[in-house]
Length: 216
Ligand code: AMP
Image 1 (spheres, protein in one colour):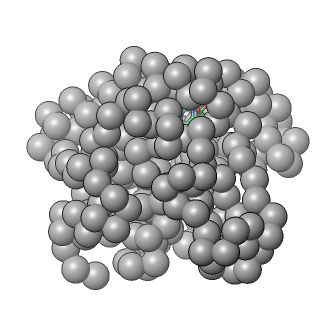
Image 2 (spheres, helix red, strand yellow):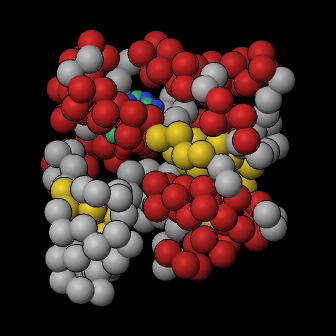
């Protein structure tokens, strides 16, 4: 089963992808995570992407398409994947359709997480992650049970993303509305777009997603 989650930054795509990975045995493909790894490794792609990401602009389509095409070819994707943060433009969506058709694959569910922009600024500027296991937290909405200790792995080191500041978040939201939202019409025209209320709490959104997807 292959899934695509669509929504602005902060909508919960990453959080929900991790839960669906566990529930359905799928692999999360986050182009943002892949790019952050490329930046950290200092690769050519990382050097090209770094400043663009810091501004909250979109990395050029050709770089993204090559990166995801190589990733989808890896063995672990054969059991199914969840696309998180890709496609982000209509040319990316068209390239994905061609890529999947080529491999005899398809998207089983395309789901929009519908949210409110102002709430996203608050969600994003408060979020942080366990360095050891990647579990996500929030200053206000999702604190660990013990202050400074990860619930999942007991880690005590946490990190915040460089682009999770208010100015960059507003630019990322503009990029979403200007360049990414048109892919909703692309999938709607294909009759495959579904939606859930991304403003509900995390467990309720997971339940809605499972309702759309069906039981594992
Ligand atoms: P994300 O982790 O999905 O919020 O992505 C972080 C940043 O990586 C974005 O603000 C973009 O600069 C870049 N990025 C991630 N995915 C894409 C994509 N599909 N197309 C273009 N840029 C992307």
